[in-house]
Image (cartoon, rainbow, N blue to C red; front, side):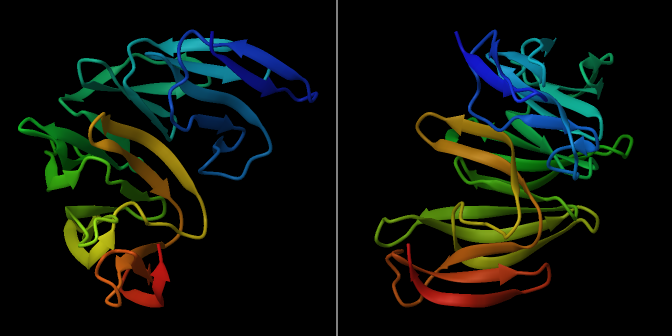
Length: 275
């Protein structure tokens, strides 16, 4: 039996027995001022998490409520629950605490998805039939009727993360990933898609895979994985982007340069650092 321990307002720990295995992902917290990663708040009301194939909500007094069955991935943005099932159907439903409205089918066929922090766009991954280590990344406008999908990339490596900006409708990803000369790591072309303008821009070449960070916070949205290819993640982040790039001082991949991207251009912060 899997258990979750919750500390209530009185400081007492409560043991909550879960109906299934706790999935290896970050849950979503609802507070008195919105979702925890979106607002400053004084109280947490619910913790949303996947238990096996069920989506559950756990209150601060230890009450567990099953919201949906057969859930593969989920995301909660602006009071809307987005979730997919085992048949790769993706739905949207209103969410108020533990009350879920009737679900609406949005689309089908995505292996995993994430909604932009502003709730305007949905990003989806599709595994290539001829190579399970490669994925296609697409974007779907959620607020535009009859708007079709835009394919951003056909060559996302399986365990390469995709980063969603919390402040702007931008997504960052690595394309055409290859192994470094020394076999230490993987590098690729860092790109940015601006959903508002519809433009794709190349930020830099030879950026290290999954080394993007910033000075603020991350929120893991969902994971996509194949056993032989590792695990990739959709990650929402705040602030500007920093990343590692292959150093000219050592092409084997043991050294890197540290750069900062402010939304317009990259600036070198340090060079020749050791991985």
